[in-house]
Length: 412
Ligand SMILES: [Zn+2]
Image (tube, rainbow, N blue to C red; front, side):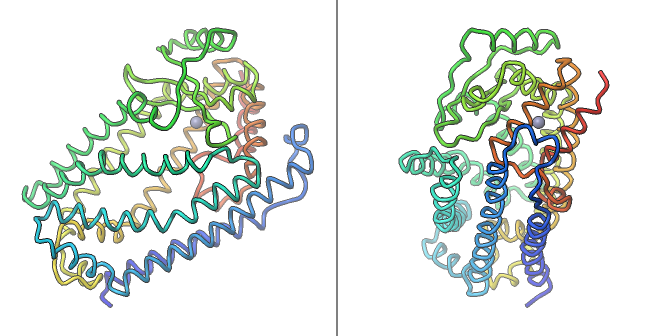
């Protein structure tokens, strides 16, 4: 085994172990007493249920992680990568077509392996806790649509990257970077109108108290809001949410139907004020720029790793290829990705506090935001007391108790 193989192996095992440790800390921190701010919204039974939900999901996560680890290591050390490679090469096609088949085959196998776990999570775990609303038909259609989108949207992009690295020479990484960034922006711009309607129905929010309250709030902060949509989130789950999508003229705010059912008008305005806060504080722009920079760095690093012999030796490959190089690069740089992910989450958690503050200050109604957060976490069975290390590794949002405390400290 060469040094590169050893580095990748340690990184993969370390990733699994550190996550299991964080999970254990998280479970050990569960307390039977309901935290103070939640005593008026949680009863003992429901609180027990939220803890059972965490336990069940954590244990299931361990099973998934161990099977995943075994599958990757098994495939690697039983010579799966060169085996598929010689199958692909037997067709005698060029680097682009061979690459598409190679990566497509690996992704398909991976997606199939994930199915039993995904089915169990949806139809057993989510069902048991009363969240699941997905029918088998919806589930299968989602799967097919997802695969079709991966082929139609991902295929051409991957073909472009493979072609640049095969034929464009030293500056291939620069071409790839430019093309991928433009492509991502176009897809994000078109997503609300072309892609998301494939999965859900979007209806304009009907006239009434809620719509006029949202519009008058948006006008009060000079937010150019034209479109508010209601999405049939209840088609898949009882969990509720709201989000922002698209950008430029194509941006819209989307409320889940399940959210509207659960909350009062002032609470919904507070939640949307939080979303508009992300926009006003330029968090969305910030996220895009960070993503663009990250893509550029990855392509640059990729450009001088992709044909390095040691990387191919690590996976028992006797022939160098761009497509296999892409996959192995992904595995070698997983640790770097891990650290970038931690930084991204840290930034995201700081942004959440800012958006909460924006909502509290501009609506002049911090109690509504607190009430909305409490209801949301009870309804979604959120863990109220996650371990700080678990939060550090996994949370893009601060724990709900910290958010409530931060809002309560804001002076208007
Ligand atoms: Zn947010």
